[in-house]
Image 1: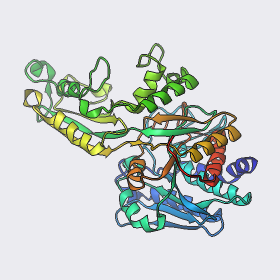
Image 2: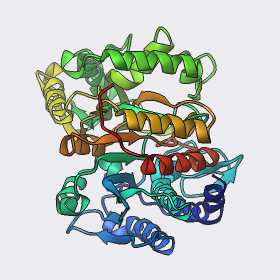
Image 3: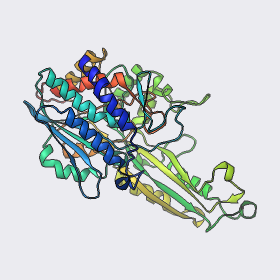
Image 4: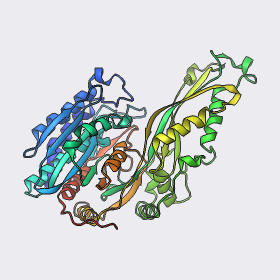
Length: 466
């Protein structure tokens, strides 16, 4: 562990500082990504670092398909049978407002053991963590299976470029018996956490048009329906505004008993930090009846967020005008077992059918990503994770679903149904991926690297279901 910590301080942190400076926004947020060149800079930074710190006989390339974001692909042959596939990504979410003074999305700052800046924790650290784990095993003379690393640049846009790369690289990847995904979260910074499910996602833009141009509100109100009110009525088809519950049964799925048991255990360990980790304003209370219910709500139930709007002038420029249209960006999280494409089609039909007052209504889907539900964990993997957590964190391993979406996991789950999965990450309390003040907890990441090394080298045994 000491050698990993030193390597992080000497080699990884400086690289991550430079990576954070690069505004490598995902293509969904930067359609001119190829011309801007920021994704290219991020990939070349990571590739150059990997070449300088490569393990013995490791091969590495930046794979490129016409018109698609690049993929960093590496292979390190091993002495034991089997293949481990390690996944991460280098593209980032956009800037977001609200960074506190002295911080910013492209301004790396180290403070109180945390590295602030966009993309460090979500999840630019992944490629550096993975190679550091391999270097640790090599220096200690520990045997391991073959390892392949796949680092994409389209994850924050729904990984729509990834299937083409999976097809192109399939003969080289082979059939992994273990997939390690480093793009997830942790319930606290005190022990190793494994992700057992990920929600899906449908997002898109709902637009309501009522006029060809804005008119005096005193003249028109009472005759012309407000586009915002029409949008509210449409959203009521989807969401109960009083409770936040999503109405249509098509967006729900039964919660497996085992996942409910996990939620109960996680609630006991995490306590009120389940909701106190969020920066509530004074007086604001969380949704849900109890801690277990809140765990399940953010991992297995559908919920809607309006994440953007157009057609609304800022308050200082808002005259007494009945506006011609309102556009709202909708983000609907789906249970892990609901198919994203089916949900997108249903949502479009739901919102566009029979518009109030005959308004012109359109819903243009953006991302439609399915979630993921982990297979039963093999005894050898469960034992290896428990031992690693106790060895490096001093506490037992914990399991919990996560509310976010990693489209790659659903793709891999379908492509390699016999594989085991360790989906984990560093996104713990207040780390705030996608929002302002995102940070990477450095001490937790160092220990996670040691755990990843132990799991990669763990002896395989006959797999039996729990």
